[in-house]
Image 1 (tube, helix red, strand yellow):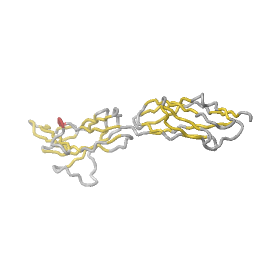
Image 2: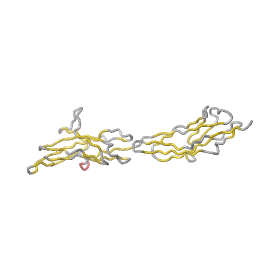
Image 3: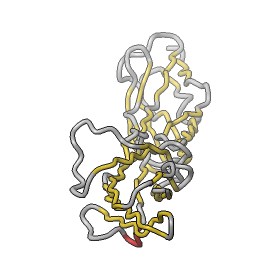
Image 4: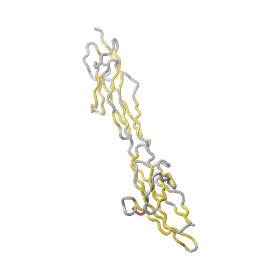
Length: 239
């Protein structure tokens, strides 16, 4: 008898692979490399770092044995999977009074041979985007605010991104901002100067700085908002 181990490389562009997050199947077939519908794999394996390997296969007879190796889609968020299939032919010959693995041929589907005879599945990782919408509340002393009575601007640096007005209940909100990369993003929310009779605008000279921290945990990105617990309080003047 003799043994042979079939394995390969698991490459992930965009981040390092996590142990056990990718799965591979080994199917035994014939020289046609055609799998009948519903064929179950002979073995399965998961990655350890950037590699994977199936359990040793035991051979007790001379001949050529045929296999198909493929990666399964484990639906890891943000990952695009390599759908390549590899055909493997293992030839078992006689060595003295025993057996030996005399040849192993690896073919990548769509190519005559696999580069350097190596099985390698290359996936790409791109974090899913996330969104965050800024908003606040306008408080008016002396009476209830009227819809669209006050205006607010959202700035990134000195660039004005959006302007909005308040609703009848005093709330206001900007359109969502989409984030595709991890990092910290800082904005300023300013109240715009207005001309409502009898109103003193105390928010014009007291802008609020907000910071969004976008993190990537390898399964898509998430946005966390760090915003001071502060609302503008508009003063009214005696008439």
